[in-house]
Image 1 (tube, rainbow, N blue to C red):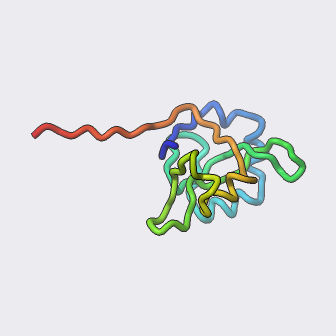
Image 2: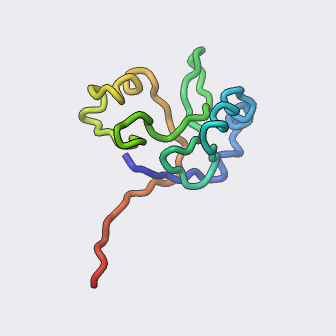
Length: 115
């Protein structure tokens, strides 16, 4: 999993976003973190995620990027091979799936500088 991704401005024009702004949950999310509808997403920020509501309809919901509560703060990476068995990730793996609208993602590469 990558640590950062990009959300294009064209996604805000989707009809799904109209309902998102009106959700009571938006105020709760905005009071706890910065909400970003477009641009570079970083761990700890919140943005829109496509998920099923209680009636099994596809809706956008405000969600924070990353898992809190780890010993080192924010967790953002999980291995596919073990995520379903890890206590931090297993509840989400089983029943909290979502799609994050993204137009690009970043993979970091460490390039040593020549002295």
